[in-house]
Image 1 (tube, rainbow, N blue to C red):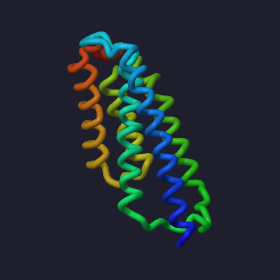
Image 2 (image 1 turned 120 degrees about the vertical axis):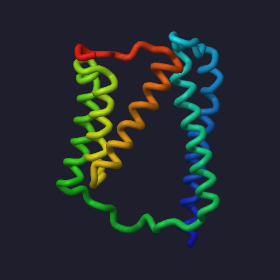
Image 3 (image 1 turned 120 degrees about the horizontal axis):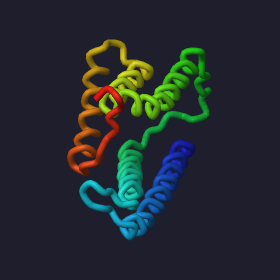
Image 4 (image 1 turned 180 degrees about the vertical axis):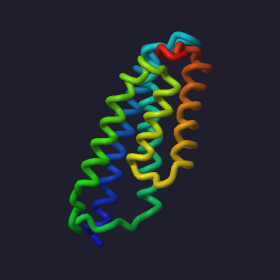
Length: 159
C-alpha cells in the first residue's frame, strides 16, 4: 500500500512541475503577440500549447487525487508484437505523408485522408466512426484556421 501512495505523490509532483513550467511560459507567450485575423502572431502557438499542458496537468492531478487506487507497477510490462510495430509504423507513415499530400491534393482532402488512415491504423474496426471522426477533424480545423483566423490553407492542384 505504501508503494501505491508514493506513486500518487510522484505523479502529483510531475504534474505540478509541468503545470509550473506551462504557467511560467504564459506571460512570455503573450508578450510575443497573438496577432490578429489573417495574421497569426508568434505567441499564439506557444500560448495554446502551454494552456493545453496546464489544463491537462491540472486535470490529471485532480484525477490522481480523486482516484487513489493504482495498478501495481511492478507487474510485467507488455511486449510489443508485430501488430504493434505495424501500427506504430502506420502512424508514422501517416504523419510523414500529410505534408506531401497537402501540396498535391490540398488541405481538405489530405487531412480527411490522413485522419481516416490514422483512425484505421489505431484500431477502429468499422468505417462509419472513422469517417465521422475524419470529417469532424477536417471541418473543425478548417473552421478554426480557414474561417476564424482567415488563413489561406493549401489548395493543391486539384482545387
